[in-house]
Picture 1 (tube, rainbow, N blue to C red):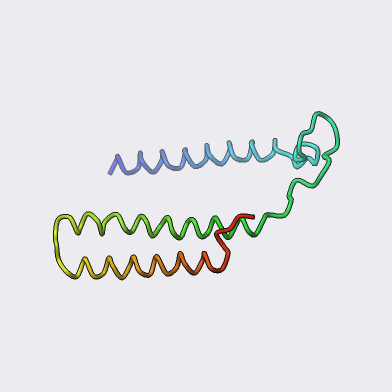
Picture 2: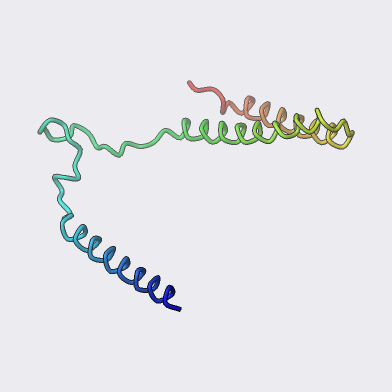
Length: 116
């Protein structure tokens, strides 16, 4: 029972310490427009730093992530085919590869893979 009270006391002291430190940090950090502005050697920024993001690049990145995850899903299929030559694994991997190829051809025909 004594160790429980010591642990509870430790948690209370730790929480008080964290509260005091966080309150000190929050009072010192004041919102200042000059500190939050981009630094360009003392000059005013020449353009707005939050420029619009290219939608073409975003779509290409999403397509890359989708195909990257599909490649990660192929690795266990290959290891399963090496150790268990079952027709279920072979047929499911062939169907998966056909769907992957059809998706790649669809993206190619839509022009999503062309950068310029």
